[in-house]
Image (cartoon, rainbow, N blue to C red; front, top):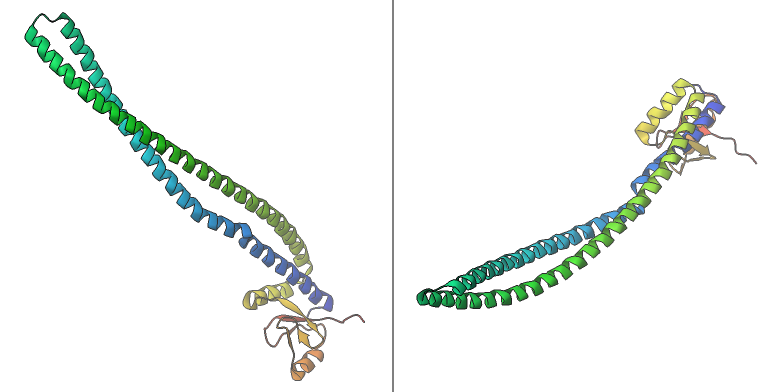
Length: 243
């Protein structure tokens, strides 16, 4: 393919921009904050499980306390009713029965109040455990939000850099003749490098020195003829080094 030396030099600039874009994509994918977030997510899962366990335990203890308090209330209502009936009773038999029931209710109430006190202590302990778990989870969520904010900032910066590079690439691509640009894109898709410089006898596409025969062939090829790296297949751009 024929292309002026200037056109071929544009490919080096294009390759540099493509290298920049690839580096920016890699930078976005390999942000150190992403690894930090992944590690934190595992910690967050454990902390959330602890939090949920503490919440379930607290709910259970509160429910148990509520049931006991309800039982105490029922006993107190029955005591009140029996006292009222005893106060107006004219039957000694009925009075004995009511008093017997009041004695039983008193014992039941004492038992319930002891259980109520124990349940209150257990509930208070569960509340303390839950409060601690809640605080730990809040701390993890705060750290997670901070990491996500740093990721968002880094991605925004990378997006701006990519947009600038893509704009520059579009402008540069417009300067390259159509068939040469198509060849560059095809070569880059196939071998990963579209174009590289031939520096002396070294191909920057492979990083290796060309054999004397290959170097002689390329040297004797007209400068307006596109040549390729024998090792990689990338376009080789011959550059006259300034002394």
